[in-house]
Amino acid sequence: MTLIHRERPARTDTRERILAVAHDAIVAKGFDATSVEEIAAGAEISRAGFFYHFPDKNALARALIERQIIEEAAMLGGFIARASELSDDPLQQMLIIMRFMAEGYAEVPGGYVGCILASATYQDRLFDSEVKAANRRAHLAWRERFRGHFERIALAYPPREPVDAGDMADMLSAVIEGGMILARGMGDPQVLVRQVLQARQMVKAVYQRA
Image (cartoon, rainbow, N blue to C red):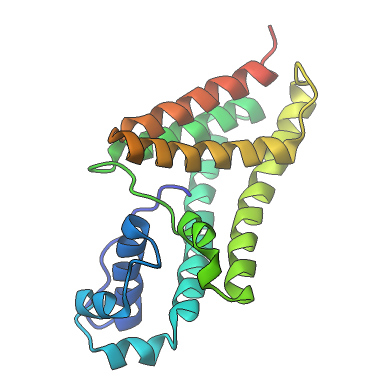
């Protein structure tokens, strides 16, 4: 659900090449519309080569989700570390993190296409319980990462109205996912950027002292 920049893997790293090709195709079209043959052709391997690394689409989906969890944690960890260097104030740190997110989305050529977690959620009928559990774990990881931050903000800046820290973290996730849908539907990549900045203003309004 968040911005991740990737270098195309080396030709010798077949598994990562498959994941890269599959990711790009799936966020653009969904799991259902992306065939094994298409992924294999994009990765320049045979159909048998695909199945050597991934027995079926469930295995592919689990690998994509697990990769998303790891990469997202590293990326957000970087944002959080940079924000902590710039400010000791928890509210200002959150506002800086959200600014970094918006700037990252704005820099993606052609706009941010979509999220592998959203694709897996929308088409969960295709997957087994392990894929669904991995997807849920990814969403909960986002919630828990930001729940603690919103709890620290509330201690320093009692909110104007009662709010739950976990709900605030979920709101941020919902704004990003919804912004992706709106941006794609309207053909305007900057809708996502504006939605993140609007959410930033809302966070400021909820917590900042008059």
